[in-house]
Image: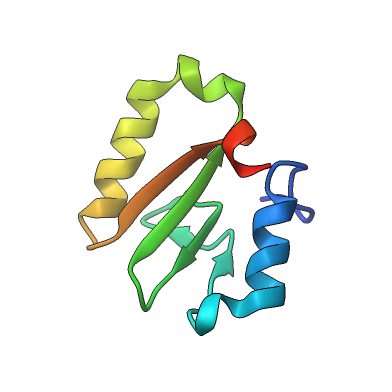
Length: 85
């Protein structure tokens, strides 16, 4: 877990905090099924992952992670650092 958001995550979490996205509450870095996710909204059942370049090399691990989270009824949305910033 990181205390501070990465440079790519900062704009997203700033927008969520500032605008509140019309109500849904997003938690930063909660643990779901033993995985630390970048963020999630429990009410909307959405997990947000913002991935650095190293994720291109670990797509099998990411697929396993996504499947484990999706078993709990969450939808995993993955964005690259470039998309998020």
